[in-house]
Image (cartoon, rainbow, N blue to C red; front, side, top):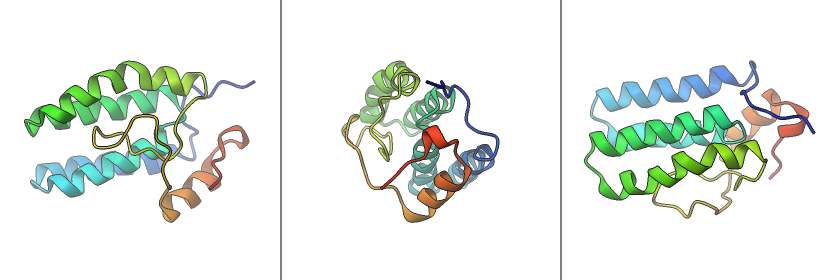
Length: 129
């Protein structure tokens, strides 16, 4: 079994772009749109412990900056456990990572992200619908 600690180099630019868009939109006070890009980054990075944990960190910071106690409280356990679940390959595929959804609930992956993930992931991490 191959451990996928780091996001594949071919997938990383898509992950990084979602984080960049989230930051840009947050700085423009477009919080809902910013959050949507954090969710997309979560979906992309979820199989990889470091990327997964980093998105939960960004979501926690988002909750703090927007003074959202539900998100702050919801992100702490996700931050502590999310990367571990990725490490052992036990993730709820497609889950958007926010406190507004159950942490273990698989979810539908948006079509555009599914294509990106399938075309830029290692065979071991290819996600099927």
